[in-house]
Length: 371
Image (spheres, rainbow, N blue to C red):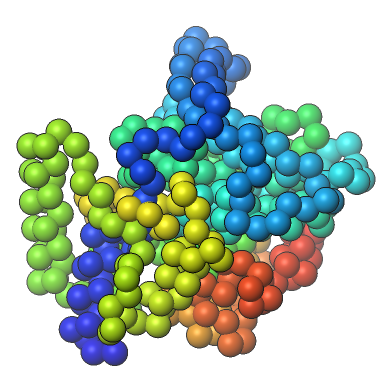
């Protein structure tokens, strides 16, 4: 692949925030639920948000008969209501269970990969939640379809808030799983939140790095300057229009010269395999200016200070493998692991189609470190 092609796809995909996709202009169909949030974390404030929550099973994976699933909500530190699917093993073996919060991939929803991971880990005895990050899916936050390294890191910490005060969760045994772009958010959360006792990333992206440098660090300062000009010109357009233009989701139809990893994204997000009506990547994309949040705000700045256990999982053939390898080099301590899955691509770790997600290894890792 030539450097010119890399730069072309880097700028194009950054404008839609790395193959994000989009929701429609309105929230999904479903019963309107008006929630009054007034809990002991913020007892002096009441916040109302109207969110459309569907109660039907609308995941892209089959429902397990080994777990109970329900929908829950909680707020992050910025007052945004997050919506999650809660998965509890039907055969609960302890009064207080270890718990895991899951999110990602970047631009996906909880009905896709994160829900599959959460349900599978619940089958293995963990209480789990898969949540929609702020501004996406069924979660709150306005305007929709934006991302932020700060707020999205906070989303993981808010999930820990929720889990830590549940009567059926041991607050000393909480872990997180971040998939794709949320792998970087998970490591960032582990660096700030000492309540997180174990972290797994799967097919991780460093969203700050890819937005600032392009794929494979192909963008130089001049290319970055051109990107800034495009993004800030779009800000002016949005200001004039009084609305935010969407950047477009996964490329469709595929151009002839599309890199293999773009084809892989298409095979998941744009087909029956993984398409979902609320998924940004499956539809119209993030706001075009969302990349501005990441270019000047590097993630992983203090990842070398994480004292708890971290497992990074990546495919041998994944275009994104260098993100995990470089992140692993920065981690310190003998409780950090890098697992490379032979023959696997980036998207192979999104679902069970290739059968390579190392659930056995993840279970052993969490059992060893959530005790």
